[in-house]
Length: 233
Image 1: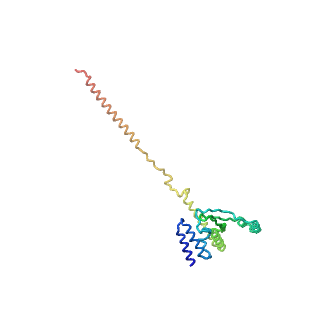
Image 2: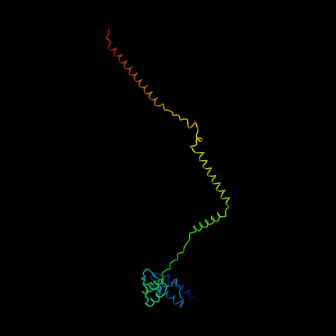
């Protein structure tokens, strides 16, 4: 029954607006009275989430201050007497978070704990391990192979190299057997262009025709003059 009552009051407070802060804080404070000393869930009622006096949530209007916790000299000596040098600064100079509520103007102090550093785990590359395994397998495989198989492989490789060298000599251009006799001796025929000669001959013929026409015209004109200048008998 208590859980259902607390849930009912909490839902009723959340449905109210921010203007009705008094009623909201009343419902949330009633949750503590209904629980009758039993602890409320820290997720919704912890001092990190809301004020421990009026039970209103922390908002943008709340004032926040970080201060160092005061420790007596005796406590400092006790802490320094320990051999744990790494945790000395954390224990001697702890810090607290003070939050001042904008509604009830009361402050709640929360101790700050530094986050633990994540331990770096060394991740070995997988590729190097695979390569090492392959190398070990290759070394172990070569030890157990017989000598006859290795000698046969060498002979086949040498024969392949000799065949390649012979093929290069056969197909080289320096070898006279690869050249054709007819193609080496005979020079290609040069076809001369006789168009220029034809053009010159045609031009000369045209000039001769024009000259003969001019002579004929001059002769005709002279004959006419001679007829005109003859004395009449």
